[in-house]
Length: 413
Image (cartoon, rainbow, N blue to C red):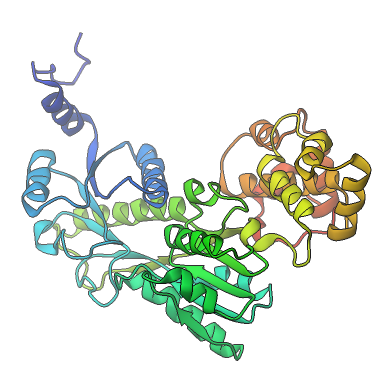
């Protein structure tokens, strides 16, 4: 039966039925974007979260689409609004294509601003600053940056921020070449700290340093940006990386589009004279072995720390697995770990679990029971006691506290 008050569905092929259905029951939003990398997928997740609240249908169109394909997509879908990610190419989807369609840009090149469309920009300087702090904490003798080599605005912004902060410390900054990278890293005074434009380029420096026989992080500390686990967890020690708020950016982007749709509705489709420009920044830095291992820690304890970081939240993890990784007796493992780290192996496991719980509570909507399970606990009693002791809050209270991820904790260990 056809629902009351709705037209009967025509006999159409799958593609045309989808077009008919969305035009009948939902507002269609076109999102010109790729889903290749984690950053783009996280942005899309944020957009979809808001879209579900608004009963929008989101259709992704490749950001590498030709002008003809862009025009065809607009003609076929008749969108209520459009979102355009310009982080890798600012010029393909031109203003003129969208005319009076409410449209918002993501990561538009600041030197080529739109005079009629709102924009949400990544604060690349703030993101780089968080990454740089991890390198400065190691007291390196020299610093270097490896960029994309494509002169993208966010790449330039990260290099400029790094240069500014190194100069303020009386240090120098080198720009690493892609050709001859290995030799360039060998020639840097040690220990040195390297920031990659993103995880992909940080990994190029990682492999070049390793092939040169250099120790990571003792000789070369390396930090990336994006926290893409495909890169960060593929090596030992893992790659420290800053995680921008991509999902939050996607959600805010969709909110901005909702505002534009409402504006157009109330103003005859005429865009604003002064479009809004907002920024989003980083959520956190995920410390891994490429920076996080304390200086002077021996190889056995380094392996133990990396093992704990990767497996602390696994069900059943305990002393036996860590000791096997250290390849020594239980007594020697216990003595070495406490001597070089300052606390026990079990305390380090619980610290890693606590940090993950903090992140899940602050940045996800997972039920408390799911948070507990993902942190490796069979019941919530221990984690609840830990939170009360370190934050004076319950798990739910911590989640409801604004900016809880910026809180300072009392020592657990």
